[in-house]
Length: 131
Image 1 (spheres, rainbow, N blue to C red):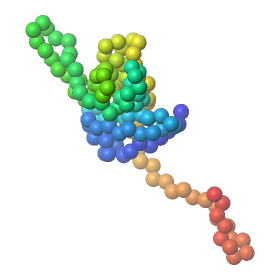
Image 2 (image 1 turned 90 degrees about the vertical axis):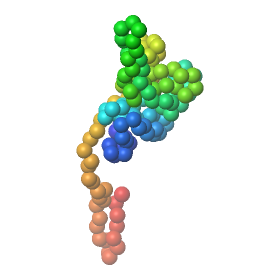
Image 3 (image 1 turned 60 degrees about the vertical axis):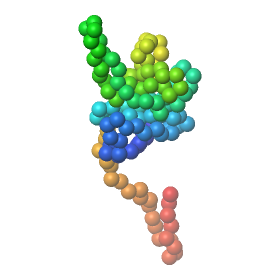
Image 4 (image 1 turned 135 degrees about the horizontal axis):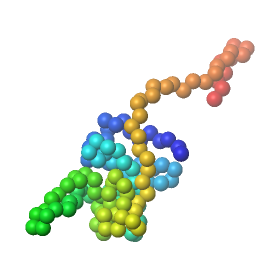
């Protein structure tokens, strides 16, 4: 599994997303309530750019006659046909066992300060770089 740095954690605030190209694939990275998730940017229905869709919540189980709304910022609606997916799992709200979007692992890692160095030598008064 390859590692790709997307951005600094401070550049992706809760409720925001960043769409990146990784190995020829378009992937949306989301900050949903302080947790980071990544999904393939393609709706399984007809291939719409899923990750540009509306990020909302959904109704929750409740007693008859009352409506509870929750999971704000965790439900992604396809921009073409409104199919809804759980950003945290990639599963469809309608049919979670058969309709899903590829999910990728995301981690927040400390910044590694590193400099790229190359061996250098002097040969007959010429400086040579080995890259």
